[in-house]
Length: 186
Image 1 (tube, helix red, strand yellow):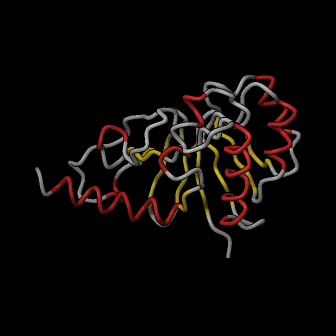
Image 2 (cartoon, helix red, strand yellow; image 1 turned 180 degrees about the horizontal axis):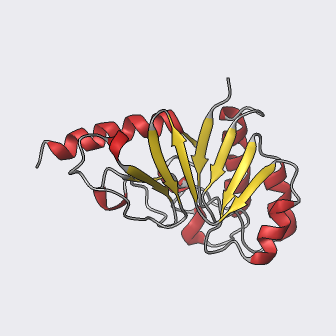
């Protein structure tokens, strides 16, 4: 049975210390390799993976080789570093099945809005997370799972998940726990 995974802000080939050092790497090529190895360890070829932006910078040729080496059916949501040129390059990758600016996704009675940027989509006045549109995003490079500690805006970025994709069922579990924690303070 195939699974759904999410991630963002891979930043393949982004040779800046402020990107790879906080992730625990001494060099960008170490980060690139670790992302590919961790991804391919978890993801099966038949799984769907949503990358919520910022796949690569600098060296498009190496970045594309890395992208093509990833398992799964890859859906790409445009990020601020995903230029028109890069989006055209992604479209030619064997494993990329979708390119879009944002996406609405229904899964197990949950409603998700997938974006690169954090987006306010709900509030805690609703009875349950099933009644809300939940935002999954990246962009901030925060190590925290929740944007501004809000239970309906979940950070899927590499930085928050040890440079590996996160399973959608795990995200739902995290969001339920966070919503319960927040309701106890209301």
